[in-house]
Image (cartoon, rainbow, N blue to C red; front, side, top):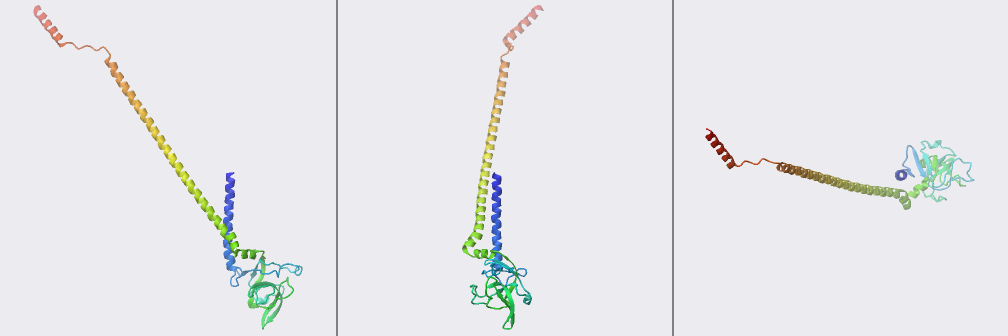
Length: 271
């Protein structure tokens, strides 16, 4: 059970790390590339759709390309705008100051080409939103074309706009990194506690070992003292046995001399 919980915990941590890294990379790329006329990656640009003028409806159900406000359209640079034709979908910078959909002046719009035309002697296109009934007011000349439509990614623009708001930044960027910081702090505290516990256990084991060695020394001392006492007892017993025998009494020197004198006199009489 504990092993399964550890696996789940590690998976969650990896997911949070992956989310944090993804959000960081996405934020850097989106801020650097999205809706930037001067930024491209291998000739591709990305723009956020501002209106539903190209969303699918009964009016344009036969048109092959549809996308909604908040989607991200990917376009490719057009080296020769004269190769574009009616029906192509392009992204261009709008110069319409009174756009009925409320798009600000200078914003990038992605619409379909209705027909070729000229404006003040310059070639251009009349464009329109397939979900609207009217063509765009301003002719799109070549210099304002940002690229030809390639594909789109649904709702990425909405997500990017959400990230730019304080609550989006807090939820998607700040929170994952804070969770990682808190997790690392808890992990560090846990490792420190484990280290202190192991240190305490090591000290206890060392104390126990020292006590065991002391007890062994005391036991050895007792054995040595017992052995000494035994040896001393054996020495006293030997001395006692030797002293309790029947030793020969020493001869009296006066008696010895008297005996010697008697023997001398006896020898003299015999002679």
